[in-house]
Length: 263
Image (tube, rainbow, N blue to C red; front, side, top):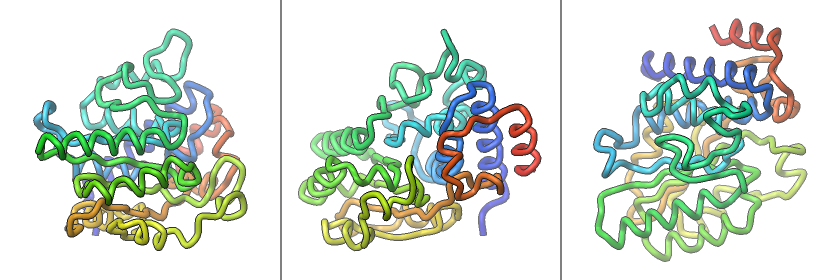
């Protein structure tokens, strides 16, 4: 069973996502809501962050879900919550896609899909070469896995023995223009990662206990792939599994309805 405190944290992060989407009048609220539980588990239950100089690295490669990372960093106390007020505004504080120079805890600039994954692999390789006890966790989208660079990296990681690297796939089964299987199918998905030499596990991406267990279990020297089955727009029933919330904006009325649904 999920710890009540973690459920509360995830709910507050979702509240922040709705507020950010409304103030900015920007898109991608659905994709941000889908990975909120993944990021909550990572930052509050899995990653070692107490010693910042030797911290684990968390990367959101699906950079269009930036709202989710900003809300998580603020909830964790890594960034000041005041920064959230300037999200995606002219002369604001935080851009709509991730820029590593914008705030503490934003480890890479992301938005061009497939890049964050391989930057993370480079970091993990560097930590291995220097014999540092640091881990790298990268969240990618399922649609993002259609990028060829993902599979180049997927070949590289087992070859280099990067058991300090974990990819978590936010598998919400909706990308910008429809179902991934209808656009460029990657099935059978888990079997592909396994065939490439990864320790692979499929979990409910909204179950914090299952996520935590999957991100921590031994991998016998292999890199880890966690395929997290999620729902786009999770937490707001009228947004759930609806493609339009990849793009629709959150008006003041929708904000009120969303926050009421999240209570």
